[in-house]
Image (tube, rainbow over all chains, first blue to last red; front, top):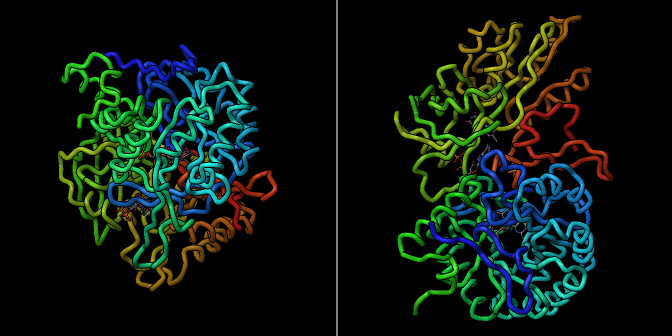
Length: 314
Length: 262
Ligand SMILES: Cc1cc2nc3c(=O)[nH]c(=O)nc-3n(C[C@H](O)[C@H](O)[C@H](O)COP(=O)(O)OP(=O)(O)OC[C@H]3O[C@@H](n4cnc5c(N)ncnc54)[C@H](O)[C@@H]3O)c2cc1C
Ligand SMILES: Cc1cc2nc3c(=O)[nH]c(=O)nc-3n(C[C@H](O)[C@H](O)[C@H](O)COP(=O)(O)O)c2cc1C
Ligand code: FES
């Protein structure tokens, strides 16, 4: 058994125990609902953390259907951030109150249509600051018209939204970066400069699929975000570029299906990893990935997960 | 309580045309399965296709046999049809909410189209009261399980668009006759089939003063309520009068009176 303890603290901004996770594996936002949906399959406390689907100040319908399409080695989705809104999330029994009973660190992904929306959710989450491990600021959803990726592809807007959320809360912040930029490094730096304690990447990449018989797009929104094994090499590259640009810890994700996939992300510079689409294929994927990481470290003679972070050779 | 279990194929046979029947040995799933629920199947060796496929639970038996009836429509079902005895598939289930069985004084009336008939079989099979199956399809080839339903003691009425079997026309046209024959009796309606048919059935029965349990589904991804892929519109107390409900976890069974026909 290798030591999988994951420390996401940085020297100049320590949160101590709060950011020490028992392992580096967490679900990717939007693929694990609010946790309750998978609690029948395994104990949530086995995860490094639970990351919930995006929460806004308001309830939202999301996009018209069809919202997903399977493609080679992946899928397109344009769910469009359907969600209950912050009030229901804080009070509804199948949301935060349930998660607080599960003995696992909780990360809340947030989004909004305006900067004020992001600030409002963050302020409301202060009510539960002790129960929360981090807020993940989603400035990278490609499937909503307002907000989302508009913030994640403009450095100035990104700085504004992150720094305003920073000012609104003392809860540790993760900024979820968009892969839909020419260079990821400047955005990673913006996140660090604006006071984000960690970054996560990558969100999905816009794609399209067409039903050749009906000649209609397979997604009602026309485009959807591509996820799954198809995007893994792009994700590994971007994690590595971000790693070379900033000091804050990185949560890497994009197409991770196995422990070995996760190892690539650690070597590229990720301190923790997110598992998304793989959960749809197998709800046990996060657990199997934890085991796979452990086996790899044991068989290669590494005692700690921290021994391999950023250790890609040249 | 749903679980994930490896199910070994006991047999996997062509029934007729594009319809196949597969039996899995999956005792952990069959022991909790009820009519109207579904399984989420990872078709073995499907390589670069990573998502599961949902299928209605057609039948279960005490020895752990789980029966699925499927139509070959694409890559996954095509591949499934080639799997052999002893191949093993990873199955999640039973998922979703079941039909509520008819009460002792109620006559069940099932309206089904295409593979929808797979979802309602257990309901009539387990029902103490003999009921009706109104089965519709484009042609004779789409009418599945007719003999099996007859064996449950149910009255089977059929319709086909091309008139190749039974009434020529839509399955909804069979409803008035059943209503006329059963005046004064308590009827309980269920329906499963293509979305257009379900919407028509729901609206027609509501007009007649009946409710119905409709099995509504949509393209699924997680199957457990986590991803919001599979939603349909149901009535809601908000500005719009509707909200998107997840057919996998809040359904697949919805009351006709709950559905938003907008
Ligand atoms: C609750 C539920 C119960 C079902 N019960 C049955 C049944 O008893 N018998 C049966 O033959 N079929 C049933 N279906 C439909 C069945 O899931 C699809 O026919 C099957 O997924 C097609 O897979 P494919 O790879 O062959 O098709 P492809 O078109 O290659 O599939 C591509 C993707 O689209 C999805 N998809 C395609 N068609 C459908 C569809 N109609 N519904 C849902 N997803 C679809 C697939 O799951 C896959 O992710 C049911 C669907 C649902 C949601
Ligand atoms: C169906 C679906 C819904 C998603 N919803 C969200 C979301 O609400 N917020 C978010 O930040 N990312 C969301 N994502 C992106 C994932 O968190 C993740 O970044 C991406 O899918 C890449 O990882 P994967 O290849 O392991 O899925 C979603 C992805 C999928 C497939
Ligand atoms: S398929 Fe994921 S919520 Fe229904």
